[in-house]
Image 1: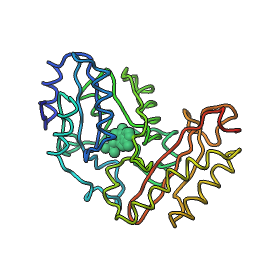
Image 2: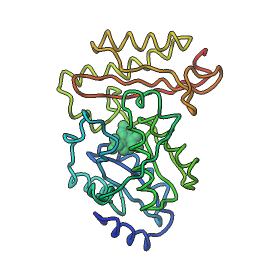
Image 3: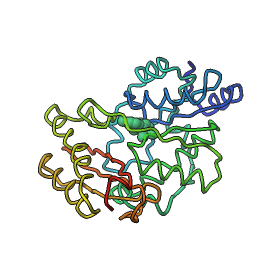
Image 4: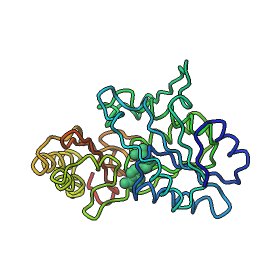
Length: 281
Ligand code: AMP
């Protein structure tokens, strides 16, 4: 497995890489959720194809008071995990490689990124779109894999690829969870043992709320369960159309119940799908 630090090295590797190239973009601090994405990438690429994992903590997607500086960066362990899961290359560039001095282009998705996390984190999805577009152009993959845990991000990236004609297949991967249902996240390591116990109520609240009959009852129940069990109000709870993210979803459309909650200083997001037949919505 090659470890590449510069755009020039990555481009040279790409020239020799055998098709199809499948990309797994990450911010590192890799866990079993990322590992599942790398396994899926390997499966998609086949034995002959090339799996590239990018590890880059992207400064432009963090707000001024967010956790950019304390975000964990265990690069050696990350490379070990990538190697163990059959990646062919890890691209781990510096900030200056991706944003050279004078860099001034930003890509702003103007619809899907306005609600949910976008409302709480202004500029976040412009940062995501910009870095993902750069990574796509540097690595030129046939396909890229993203987790459904970051549901809005997946929808925004599908739109990025559609609207800018990237011609890259975007593959969504189901959320990988801990034994108690908590979605795996690099940020879970910020939680104290007590907070970690409370965090399990978050996915349980979303799952429980899907039993309700209308969008209003579903969001009200999830909000109440989160407040009662975790002790803090969610940043948002929203039932949205699985594709357009419109809220509430039209009757009969596949929907997603998405939410964010802060436990102490740690912000957690999660979502559950609601098939039209399950919800009387
Ligand atoms: P991150 O390193 O948090 O930016 O995540 C990199 C990629 O891994 C994104 O596509 C995430 O959606 C995905 N991911 C993170 N956590 C999980 C998880 N628990 N299950 C599935 N995918 C995940």
